[in-house]
Picture (cartoon, rainbow, N blue to C red):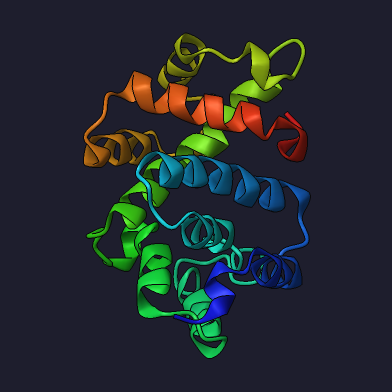
Length: 188
């Protein structure tokens, strides 16, 4: 396996080469934070899992259409020596690619992607704008409000959690706890 897939600095360099927008960078870090916590929980390769999450949307700013993202990113990563499992996990985070989520890594990435963004949005509407105030109950209440963070797919959150075989409350709390531990980098 290529060292680049476990090298966070190399992956950060790729992320920053293709992504300039602050909100997309914060999203990459938030998803990375949640996926990393699951890698630790499941005793998996933390560096590998973290870097998959870090790069899952790295191509989105330059290639935002369903015809290009995440396909262009997969091609770029292949040229840089990233293996098929790494690239397939990234491809599978978008339902429209038709790439099935067969590995635990791909299931965790999918389950954390939309939820990390949603938790971030919930944090921003808290009076203190601090993740320390975010509770499972408030996240679930906002999930029911279709006008709130309407770009976030509730269906993906529910389907991702179900594919992991855990209760929604547990998944939300797990991601909140992970994000709290990294709140400085996430600006939460």
